[in-house]
Image (cartoon, rainbow, N blue to C red):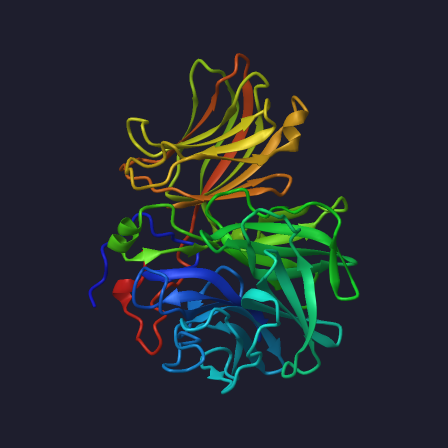
Length: 492
């Protein structure tokens, strides 16, 4: 098969194969000195079908090695129409994967398992299902998440109940083989008259006596919707929230995040799926769809705020410093900061003009007509990321998206930003740990350059530093089972 033409939107440092469809990250596990990231993968095209588990591993979160496809549907088997989402654990000398066995002729996805004794290169499926039937009263059932807590193994399964509520169902086991059902671990509130919802991909992390439950909201009519995080405490097998659920990420293009606890530490890592924000025909033309976010560190503050920051290892990706500028700007004219590559990491400290919106503009066309705006609005107290003018192609989705920024309530206080852009994905982190992820598709030849702008009548102070990112450590050759690596498929 000939290589596709180089696609300027194909991310360079974010994990994905060089072609075809991916969605949910699965099976995040640390085993024998390597981080393993599995993901939903169609090896035959850029659409959601024929779902396998693709597989990368890394010793350091920087250098990634593609391994053979881990799980493949068995014709006529329990997973004949797809090896859907789940997770994996490390036990002694083996890895055990738990996944949703999909068939088009049943509405539920029973729990299946497979194991590897050679560090994930080959996998043997358990011949029979681990959990074959959903509990009574459920209308959706999929996406196991297994973890060890004390001496016991525990499992959450995403579900919907027949009264319209979403649920994460709890199971426990002593040996990973026999599982006892303990009922709903947590459910959404009953809301008579509203459409039913389900929770996909439940994820659970503990921080001392407090914990977070991350769920991806799904509806029968529209499918995947958004991701929320619940903070609370567990007692007697039930999760009790201490606050209302909030968005895990304030952007429009992230779903189905998955967690990994680094062994021997209290450090939690998270990857999510960033779907395409463009016409399906465009994605089909380019031969690929979907990307995983960069790994993030997740923590919980004393006041119960969930904080996400780029994994500390990502600093090693920084190459040459592209720019370092300080100064101030007024509405009279933007401050030109300089050029950046199509894959860069930026830090900014901005003191916004209280009388208007101040922030960064990433200009991607020579005439300035194509750009992505990242602004701070003291009047609303929000970060605003606007991609309305971010692509000259009308097949790209537009829109403006916001995240709360409490620092804006204190005039004169610098607002800290960390922005990582990789060709067609931007992950915008606020200093307080909020994040907004979106996709955008610049078409112009550039060069890409940064500006600071304000609409206010006063001035906005800034200090901005940016680095071009080195991409040589991300080896994303083909992950087709048994297919030799083709140098023509290796991304520059």
